[in-house]
Length: 232
Image 1 (cartoon, helix red, strand yellow):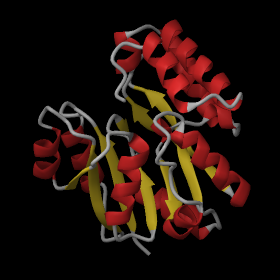
Image 2 (spheres, helix red, strand yellow; image 1 turned 120 degrees about the vertical axis):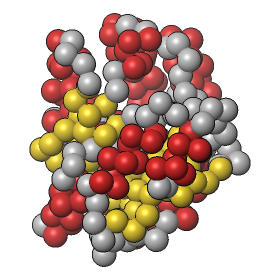
Image 3 (cartoon, rainbow, N blue to C red; image 1 turned 60 degrees about the vertical axis):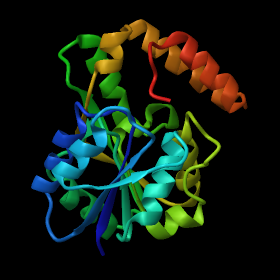
């Protein structure tokens, strides 16, 4: 059994090269491939990704769900590992994921920790160890057996936001889901560009709208009205 990594990108030239090098440096023969699925970047994301050793695809539609589905279809591994461009998994990620699979889990994620010493962000990070859907998110990375991913239909192509929550809910209804007791390191850039209170408020608003059954376009409009330059 081998693992494939899928990274959705849009103008990620600042982080993509370092992430791919980190993933390759800490890999072995169990890593099948790393696929960057790009949403039409206007910077040097593709150039940096190829230079660092990834396979690059251009998605006909911009949107993480569509991009990740496209990337997954192109990969060869029996395990799919979805990683955001600003999330760095632990160096032990291969050992961790294969160990989880060996103990009967078909999917899971890491906790996360921001690359910031700000106390409020440390509090946010602490909640990612709790086994509740509101404490999940794509920044924690997501690994899942390909067979299960395909059985559940993958990410919903019509989702622009909250695509990770939708899939994780389906996974948790179908099988065991593990939260690995280690941290992925996540960029605090969104908080730096906005503010702690504003980002948390925007997340709360969209989360409540999602569980109230709001349409995607309504949630996207609400989020864009609150957050400076979101990447969708």
